[in-house]
Structures are given as structure tokens and as C-alpha cells.
Length: 321
Image (cartoon, rainbow, N blue to C red):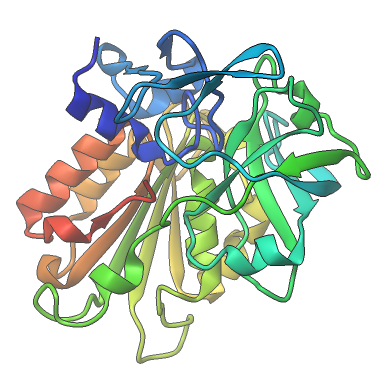
């Protein structure tokens, strides 16, 4: 079984699930990463994700039922919400983009990209999913977008139709600590270059960060802001999520680098693992660079090792958990 430190790193996916999903389902036994994570880890590095985080789960009796409460976050405070759209997020349809209308006070509490909520059907029997919010914070728009990978047991959300009533918790987590670690002189000079790393549906909170404006990236053709590059790893082109937004991201100043582990013969882009692509490209001005990461343990450790050896301050390797 993994050690406590391994558990901490394995959960870097920041509530993006048992593989590289944008959700987490409470489970009783450790489960093996699904095949969707294989492109980003060599086979010998397939990981187990433990059920606990930093303390035992709390078993209680609720209305005669034996209920397990997660031991690494506050108990949820549920509010009614409504699914407003459900569309496939990639060509294969393996992931869906779901928009849910939430109470205004819930939307107002979402301030930092990388935060998450729990979502369940409007009953106490459904196991809640932990979903990283894929849309940027917007207090004026009481709607959250989520990226959810289809897996056994989550059909209730991946097949939900507009008008479906669900329940959402309060906004949870601290998100990516960008202001604290990328701004000011905490580490040398303020960050001038941002590198972003995502695997599979781990793109969800990274997307929120890019679209929030909080990274201070200079728009294409302009000066005065940071430079930024996104390394996004998937198996094949049909698994790439949010392709229709790549153009907008490029206009906002983010260089998008898809990396395929199982590319078709006509693929002309990068291949292999995102960590290998980073090693090939190198890190520009390491002391003034920072990174946001959302992926499994193997990717996280490899990328962090490369960044650290290049000279990036460890405190600027940011995760949302």
C-alpha cells in the first residue's frame, strides 16, 4: 500500500478522480488507475489511489443508515441546482461538458480556479462526485461548467438531460495558490513565464485558470504580461477535450501543445508523454517561471523533477489540492 506521502502526491489530480478524471467518487478499497491514464505513465508506474487522505473516515449513523464521511474536507452543505446543458467534450464522447445552474451564493463563493464542489442527485443514496470547476470564477454568472469522464456508475450525471435536478455542495478547496506564489518577490522576481500541465480530463481546473485572467498572461501580439505554454496529454486526437477553445486560448496568449501517446500515422504534432515534451523544450528562465499541474502521480513527479533540476523554485509548482 502507498505511504502517506504517496497518498498526498496521488491526490494532486485535485479531485479529478480515480484516474485523470475531473471528479472523485468515494470508494472503500484502493482502485487501480483506469487505462485512460496509461498514456501519461510508463506501465510500471500505474498507481493506486488510497481511500483516505490525512485522517480516518468518520462512520456515523444517519437516519438508520451507516454513512461514511470523507475525512479530508468539511461535511457538504447541500443546495439545489439544475443541469442546463450536457454536450460531449471530445470527439470520442468519452468526456462530457456539463453546465449546472447553481445558487448565486454558491457562485459568489467561487473565487480561485482549482476549487471544487461535490455533486449528487437530489437524494441521500447517491454517492457524491467531487468535481473540479472547469469554468472561471464569475460572481455574475451563477453557473458552473464541469468536465466529467464517463465511467461505470456515473451515468446519472454523464447522461443527465437539461432540467435534471441535482444537489451541489458549498465551494471547497483553496484552488491554485497563484497570487501567493506567482506574484511579488516571495521567490526572486515575480513570475514571467507560466507552464501548465494537464493529462486527460485533468484539463478542467487548468482551463478555469487560463480563462480566469488571474495568470496575467499577455494576449497574442501584445506586450507587458507573462508568456504561457500548455502541455496537454491524451491518447489520441479523439480524446482531446475543448478543441474548439484552443483558438481562443492561443489568442489569450497560451501556446497549446497537445501530446499524444497513441497517435495516428498522420499526426504531425508532439508524441509520447508531457514530461518528455517538457524535457525536450527546456524551461525558459527557470528562476522566473512557475507551473500549474493537474494529473496523476507519475506525471506530477516527473514534471516536478524536471522543473526543479532546471532551477524552478519548488514553491512555484502549483497544484489545486
